[in-house]
Image (cartoon, rainbow, N blue to C red):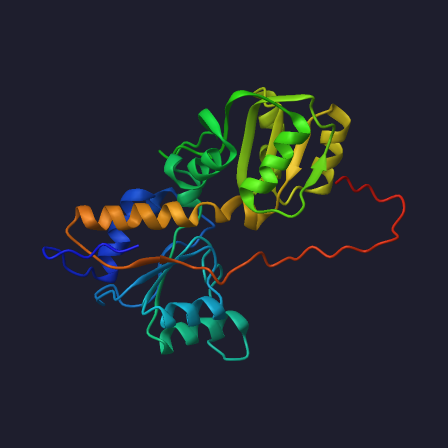
Length: 286
């Protein structure tokens, strides 16, 4: 992506922060969350922006290689205060690497979860929903967590689960509860979504897609006959990265600011799928 024009000027880190605040207001973040500018100088000129789901050593290397001195990530680099900044602590070491590399880091986490044009909108688009609404509205002025909406036409249940895998880039998904014959109404939540499963059923969803489904929630789904698809934390959130990059570049351009906004291509799910043949009794459906 590129937004250079003769009349445009490069933004400062603080101006990118302001643009992100317009897209996903930081005040909407949960109290336990840590969002905004986590590393760097708000007055520094931005040479390039790299958008990624996580900040890792490989993402830092990628940022430097692409000439980006600002990373915009969904997950915060720092969740908890650091009592010491030591190279033998993985999180502190990553902060040190960012500072030494002169790379600023901004996090847009639960604030991006709560706006329609954030994780919710990206998931709705990926799953092919025509009309959708927020699943759980919050009282802080944000739209809320999760989504529920309708397909243009009903789809056979197993076929829709395959669609989830294809749309989110999953080699496998975990399914709890019976697969419905037809799927017309879909609920979904990016990342950890166990807490919204019951609400999804109450609001009439035929199927609920999220990540990190807890064991007891899976048993509940099995008992009440409700289908939950666990596509993983990574897969249900990585769909927001590219749309966020595009919207950020557009918002900066509207302010007369131009800078390259790139999308990280070095990250993958932290978990890999490893088949263990010969495990009789373990359900596996192809």
